[in-house]
Structure formats: C-alpha cells, structure tokens
Length: 355
Image: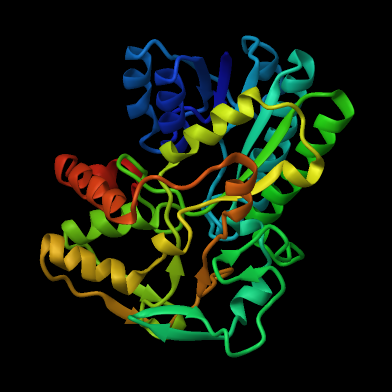
C-alpha cells in the first residue's frame, strides 16, 4: 500500500515510516524541517528507499503537488501544550499549523480518495477535572484517590474516550480536538476512511529533547550531562505522572486500520498508550536516572506552568476491544533505549532543542 506521512522527519513520523516500510508498504512523506534536529532523519530514511519531500502542510499549493497515496498518516504538529502562549510561536501560527494544516491534508485525502489516520493526543481531554482530581501519593507518584468522587470517564485503568473534552484543553489541545472533528466530517462527507488515534506520551531513542514535548528524552539527556533540572509545580516534589508509549508499538494497529473498512463514528476514535503499567512520575524517573548515571540534584520549584496537570494516564481498553491492540515495549526498555542514544549522541540536546 502507498502511504504518505506528514512530518516524516520528526521523531514519531520517522519511527512510523521505518516500521511501515519494514512491513512491506511503499512509504513516502514530507516535512518542512522547521523543527531542530529533523534534518538528521532525512538521510537514514532515504537509505531505506523512503522518499522524503520538502513541503509545508500549511501551503495548499505545495500539498497539491504531492504524489498520490492510498493513506495519509498525519504525524505533523506543533506538539507543545504551551504552544501559542510561551513566546516561541504565536497563537495564529499554532492554529495555522495544527488546524489549517490538517484541513489542507484532508483536502489532499479528498482529492485522492486516500484514507486518513490522525495521530492525536491525550491533551484533548479537559484540564479542569484533571487539575482538580483528588489524588494521593504512592511511591513518590500521584494517583487518583478512589475513596472520593472521581470524574466520569475515569476508570481504574485511566481516562477512557468518554472523559470530558470541553474547554479548557489548551490552545494546542483545542487545535487537535478541532482537527479530529474536521477529519471525521471530511471522511463522512467525501467517503474516505478516517481513524483518530489519541496517543499518550510518545517516547524513545531519537526523540527531540524538550521539556514541553519530549519529557522522558529531555530528562534523561539533561541528567546524563548534569544540566539544571527542576520539579515545576505541584509543590516541587516531582510527583506528577504521565504514561509512556513507543511509537513503533502503533504499527500493529496502523496495519489493521489500513485494511479496515469505514467504521461507525464512535469506533473511529481510540486511546493508545502505555497505560497504567507504564505510568511514571518525574521523581521516579529521577530515581531511574540516578541508578543508571549516578546522582544529580533536581531543584524543587513549585512555580506552576500554564495548562499543567498532576496526573494523566490513558485507558486503552477500547483499542484492545476494537483492534486487539496492546503496548509491546516496556517503560524500562524505552528508558534504556533513550539512555543509550543519549550516551552515543552527546550533543543531542543542543541539536534538537537549542536554547
């Protein structure tokens, strides 16, 4: 099958491209290369006979020149929850990239009758019920306090797809949620298959290390090099928790979606994450780093960040029911993979997240 990947030279795009190519598909993709470090992925992909084009999904004319494909996998986004408010990008730039760019991709799918897979995010879920979630501390990590009333859609395994998506979700989350809605509408209106894969925190070797986008890679690289680290917000204890998924673990579900007929609208959206078994706090990550690399001081700093939440873990039971999908790579394996890459690439932070 001919597959075109947007953001192919990003961490997720390049990982998915290699996995799909190895599975026997004809893979190509495009990137605008504005993300520091993305250029490093071009040559390795091209050595695998994956065609890499330079194009910006915000440019409708450039999208019109792309080769025909059977499916588009959208792995391009400004993936920071702080985008549009942190001074790095404007709110208009964020919307242009994450939402208007999606519309251009959907127009491509309409023109070529190509299926569409959107790699979405856990940050479409509402901030308020998560920020006010009753929690307790277990083993240096926050966890929901099940002795108290909890929000609808929060199961013993995490947030399921029925959890609230009402404002606020951050500007970033809103662009992804709007992209989900537009993708489903385009698919219904113009008759091409659409799947929305809401991913937890994606991590692995070669991820670009920024605290607001690739926290696991950033923390491990910074710890190894004894760069300053802080526990921000939540009392400065580092107890905030995220789950962890390697993007190559998406391959089995992508293969099934490529061959699947159009499903009912409610079955086109599912969570994909490492789940509760992968969940880890920053403090626990620090303990792992200390064992792996030796001690390093982390500054406690209770200063809150916009849109930050204390705990988010996705329940992927629906993905298991629909697609017989489960994560395959353990958190320990992901962390070790990042650590080895960090040791082999001493300038990685400077390359992928220049100050």
